[in-house]
Image 1 (cartoon, one colour):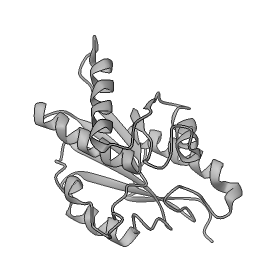
Image 2 (cartoon, helix red, strand yellow):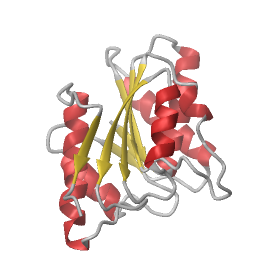
Image 3 (cartoon, one colour):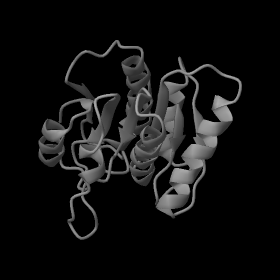
Length: 196
């Protein structure tokens, strides 16, 4: 998987570190540091894709990101499909920022994804930038198949209540994402963390 971080953090942000720790127990991850510029982040994805393509056979492309990184992953997917409309792509979108700072809905790029794309959303049930009811409404309109992981007690930064559970919950999200890639997650919606 090629992955990048959110706008307000770096690769060392706890949410990214914990997710990657769980994910990398069974799958490899290439994480890259990006700037605050969304277009630049999309270019970063394409540079990583080109690097990994050299000398390898065509296979499923896995892109992921947290928050702004998730938006960049979707935008990079759209550009890949413009060149190769049959490309198989799987997206892992952690804390997708569905609502912008002016309450604008950022759903157009999700609705434009085609059936060759599979999407796993990972979001906290306290994420103000990605309310579950709004996300589920968007998912119901998407052409791409999607599944959802809800992290109980987590906000947009994947900070949990209680805070002592944050690392374990973050690692578990990575493990579940890797399991989803292997085709082992059948539930439409999965839950991580204790009910409060």
